[in-house]
Length: 314
Image 1 (cartoon, one colour):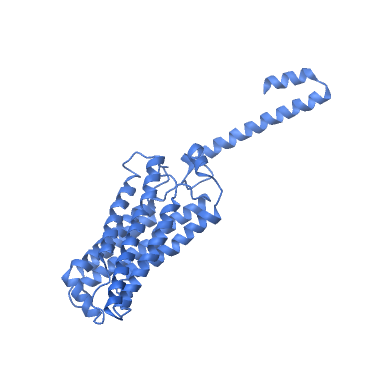
Image 2 (tube, rainbow, N blue to C red):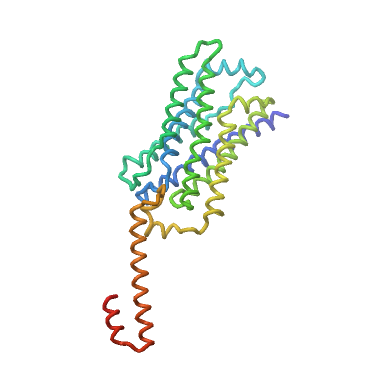
């Protein structure tokens, strides 16, 4: 390949990188804005937004070390002699930092902004155990560094694998919540469309960078970017299927905003007080309709005195 084509390929790589940064970066804002406009976080899974903070913190630290740590870069070069330059780019670090900050802000909307939140919107015990386990793994791997059998680059890879694990886990509560509610109201589809676009662009940049090195080990050498894009694309397709096909037309945004906001995002149970009140109200309405029907029947039979009495009851 000529130098001219290589220069062009590097320019395309940078374009892909910053394009995916924009798509993935902007994808965080629709949900943030929706929460602000609704003054509510109902319809959202707290598990998702809590573990998201830890995941992007791991992504930020691993990207920073790949770019700026001489020790980590040297250890990477020794493990990948045919492609000693890590495929982590500046746009990867920029995205990770931005995502971590926005995730913290969105998470804070559950607690610090005074938004409406249903009492059942709590961090689940399984998710709390997973978070504690991830933090324990990071601490243990850091303390295990001896420079021989376990090096700092191994700690960076632990951070990468934790981020990948979190990326798989974090989508499950929201997907299940949408399934349980048979609705995607409160969950922004716009961030999903941007997310899948960013995933495709990120994967394209990584493939192009590895091809320029003439060594495909750059894919496995950057597992967080390689698998993160594929995980995002997979779950985004699930959310798109839920929104556009599975639960399409179940209830409109306007109807939900006018009358059902306090019921969105609830893990519904048969003992729900509001549902019981609605059931009683419906029974009373049915009883009134029955009395009116009886009055109408007596009109036909020619008993006006009974009609007057029943009308007063109604």
